Amino acid sequence: MHPATARRAVAALVTSKIREIANAGLDAGDVLAFWFGEPDEVTPQFIRQAAGEALAAGETFYTHNLGLGELRAAIAAYVSRLHQPAGTDRIAVTASGMSALAIAFQALVDPGDRVVAVTPVWPNLVEIPKILSARVDPIALRFGAGGWTLDLDRLLDALTPATRVLVINSPNNPTGWTVTPDEQRAIFERCHQRGIWIVADDVYERLYYRDHAACAPSFLDFAPPEARIVSTNSFSKAWLMTGFRLGWIVAPSALVPELATLIEYNTSCSPAFVQRAGVAAIEGGEATVAATRARFRRARDRLVGALAALPEVDVALPPGAMYAFFRIHGVDDSLAFCRELVVRERLGLAPGSAFGPDGEGFVRWCFAASDERLDEGVARLARHLRSRTVR
Image 1 (cartoon, rainbow, N blue to C red):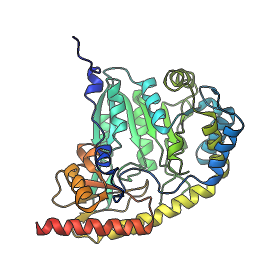
Image 2: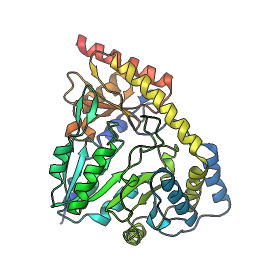
Image 3: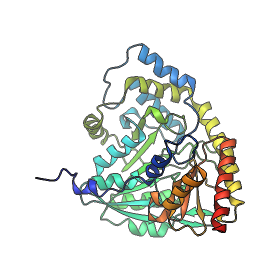
Image 4: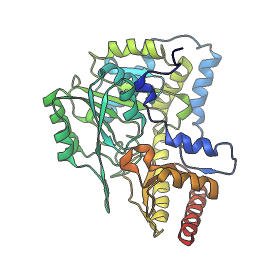
């Protein structure tokens, strides 16, 4: 009898260590959880209302593969406000930011292709190309007193003519590192010269805390419309819509018909009533985005300040995203450490090893939470670190 197993590329995938920790504590109601990248607030009422009204009106049928015309127009106008002008012919609506990434890689990567990724990074970004039997080469950020930085020369050297795709998540999950405009231009020029595609995961672009900017630096700020840039994004973070599963892609117009075909064979389309919520979010949600960014900035400052006061912790203020990614002295197995935290202190954090070997020894804490929860979490971590010293 032939074994009932998946193909080799799938069997070799690394399972999520974030989910491994969460599954160990989800059934326990007393765990103070910061392991997922999810705000602790419900979606604003006006967005939920738009979805509810669309359902009540009977919008339960298929839509265009690329999304409702109204939503594509709203996204194009939104992108044009933040970056350079972009028409609807460059927009594809997807059933989540995760789906946007999967479809982008399906469009660009063949088996055996070389993909370069800036790491540590959310594991999905390096595992999706592997599903397609591509080879992923990581280029690690460096951690120091000033936080996480990119060795630009090392990255540029890695962008050889044999490279098919460079994937960059900025602001970065888990580190908060954000690529600078000068770095972006150097990266773009190298990729442009060598015909390398850039897949930019821009999901955290509105959660950027430096200079009170409207958003983080983006390749969309300067790249020509038909350049080999694919920007993926999501409604999940800035508009507090994680459960809606709605995202989008900005791509060269020549690629968009192929994206429509892939969407057909992946999800067919995003639900109409969810897309109506997306229209409401973009057209009326700038106050929500501003309030979310301000709240997360305060939470970041509060958490990082408290962590920095612990002698066993090395931490730097992240310029973007919604995570503190910090090193704990003496921890060389972050998965075991986080398991111990759940069992002993009922505290749920994500192990740094979940984000690749370059994250080992670090722990990720999502700070999209109330002051009370953050303070109690720090107290539990401090208590655990003291008990480790005693043991």
